[in-house]
Length: 402
Picture (cartoon, rainbow, N blue to C red):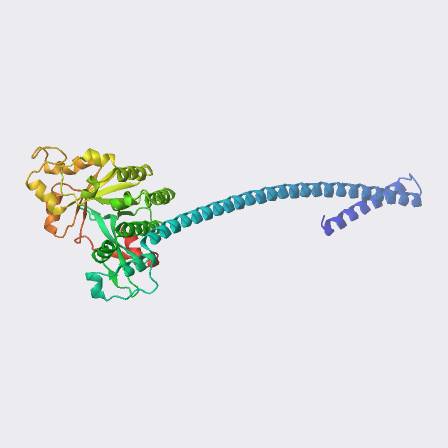
């Protein structure tokens, strides 16, 4: 208790003792000395009673404090246990992610080493080329060097919805660079690969690098859908494809963002092995697009079974088919209305994309048939997105427009 309260209580007990002593003496109950002695006894008894009560109260308060401390300690112990459990979970997650990254990296290195080895390796000092040479053709050593050192750039061209012209997808195009950063066009490096007999190896490396870059792009925005060209030689390559399939299985989270694109002639001439490998990719959720569709009177059901979800027809080709009332998907000429053509593709699970759109007049005619998607220089030219600047300013407009 506070000191002032204690003093007041002591004074109260003293007053009681004095009053008792005076009363004993006044009423003649005892002599003066004995009366004062009895007053002192009363004072001592009262003081002892007060002290005992105070100690009891203090003991009770102390026990309450001890119980509170015990409860707080128990709560702290539970919080520490929960924190340790969370730390253990985080550590286990980090270990699992690290193991997965290591496994993925090992798989990537194995694929790349295999492909570079099949190409015969890269030269230490390939001869430089001028920008003019990149347009006409280059030596195979320069192509090998560019591939081996990951000087592969991804160019993205938007695919927009009509009539809003909002970007929904991108088509990717690969370009190589020599050591002087000169662009090596596809015509140049494909010609060099053909002369060296390593077209399949170059196709595979370009495909693999495309997927790597797409994986980087989609880390920040899963809404991006990117068409990536794949050759049937890669699809049927029994040495390359098993490792590539395993790599895609480990990156199956890309299935909603990556669409493999094949030309119609290559699709219709696909081998049994290529068809089987397409089915394996489809099993992991990956989709396909068929472009360069010159023949519209083809087997749509076969395309649907193969996992084809997009079909690209040039705007001019589509308009000519409408004007000439050509047969489409086995339906005889004139038996289908022009505005029902996109619905016919949709019936077989495919979105129709009109590509190579260069003029506004073409867009006007396409709007008459209510086509959903279009692609071409009118909506945007291919723009470079290099692997080393994916997280910088060039990539930002691409992500925002998606």
